[in-house]
Amino acid sequence: MSYTHTITVPMSYAQAVEATRAALAEEGFGILTEIDVKATFTKKLGAESGEAVGDYVILGACNPSLASKALAAEPQLGALLPCNVVVRRGATEDHATIDAIDPQTMVQLSDSAAVREVAEDAERRLRAALDAVGVASKHA
Image (cartoon, rainbow, N blue to C red; front, top):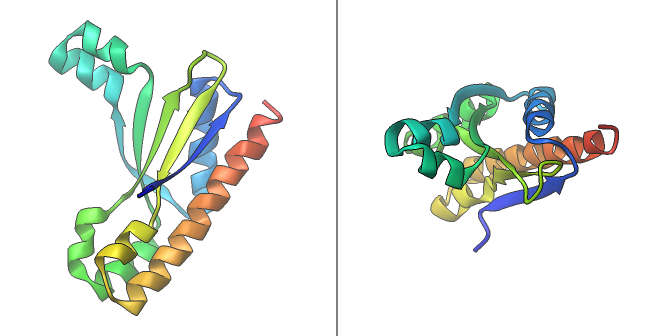
C-alpha cells in the first residue's frame, strides 16, 4: 500500500524546502510543526546518526478549513493531523525528494462520507503543491 505522493526534483535541499513551503501556502496550508530530523538525531543519538539520515525535515502542514471539517466528522481524526510533508536531500546535493502523506489513508480508516470529501480535497491540494514544486524546480 502506498501512503505517500512522492516527487524528486533537481533542486538543492534548501531550495526544495523553500519551494515546498511556498507551494503549501498557495494551497492554503500553514506549517504547524517542523522537525529537523538530522538535528534531532544528532542531539539525541550522536553525530553519526544525524549524518546517516542526512538533510531531512518533516513539515506538519495544516489547512484549517479542511482540518475543521475532518474533526467535525470524526474527532479522533486529530490523531492523523497535521498532514506530514517530508523534504529530504536526494542521492546528490542537487536533488531533493518530497513525500506528502496521501490523505486517502484517512478514507481507509473511516466510512464517513464527510471524511472522504475532506480527504479528496486535501489530496487535490497536496498534489497541486507537489506539482508546483516540480514546476519551480525547472526554473531553479
